[in-house]
Image (cartoon, rainbow, N blue to C red):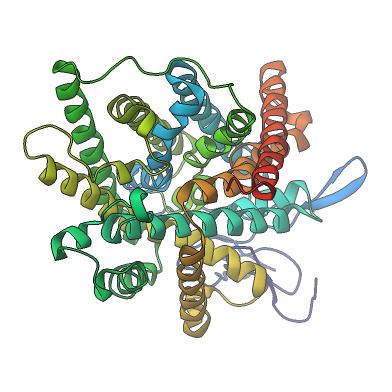
Length: 494
């Protein structure tokens, strides 16, 4: 560290920490001899905090990094705001693929795996919070770098970029499917704008629709600099997801009462080689539906009167609500459409449901979820932009303090997702690749590796066993899912 004047140290979120020329940290209040009351620049993501003297930590005789900074100032976000932001991060496009996973796994096993992944997600977030507080690391990348200094931050950044790119591309694909239709020839599913216009027109084509959506809706929302600024759109987005689930349940119950729904598939399909490949890739698709870990730290930092207990309430409420929504969507969606279920269940809502006002119900379902995704998109883009900035401009001033960087990265990422949505054929393909690589790593493998790194401080046998289980599951799913994708790609099955 330089000792000439004030040395600047930048953390991964862009906040700057100042040390005086003696290397000592400023006090939170007042002054003493040899100390200066100096605060660092305020980042739009992190509240004000004061630097502590870095404490070198050794593991096995080797230095593994420094402890970070305290966060004495309270944030401004309420628990309900945190719940809506985290819930909306979770309930995105993944919910649309869950009914199709039941066709591969069978209903009982499929629902059990949803419950298991939900429980593991809650535990992995618990690990992140626990070791963030112990190590005083306030971003996911700082925490992983603290445990694995040479590769941790880079691995996390690459995983978030892969995961969030895939998710944002999927969102645009679903919006295009809903408004412009999907498929070709006899397998074409009509979009809302096609129906309302009486057929395909230049202005309701996929490219035009996605471009207009980006410019008029998603672009302005993605330019907001505080994640808490999105809590109103998050609440509305989650409400629209609930509307979708409620309508799905009502329609299914009507069809059940009329005796128009048969017995669902109960066992996994193992008849062909393709069935086995699908079985290997379906768990990554389901894991994708629960990934929210990249937004846990920003939500915690902005929480009012923040504490581990208050954040635990946010996590329990969010995971509980989202798991319930997923279970209902997967079961009732599969009951309603059976073996005809599409990878994107919204594509099934262009046919006659054999209920009163079927056309209107179809329109409400598709439009409500398209609007839901418009509310989720900025949350995913927020963390995406922060990670890209940290990777490309390490040590630069806070992103919000540089309008050129802020808007430049925002436009570049929106352009990237726009191009990706034009080339990726459907959401299932995107989920298979991102789920087997980035999603499993972010959700299970990385949090477990962080806990394992600081194994001497573990609570006991139970935690050690769960951490080893998570690492094993993460590695197994990544290997089998990736191999399955490679085989299907090489044989033309994707």
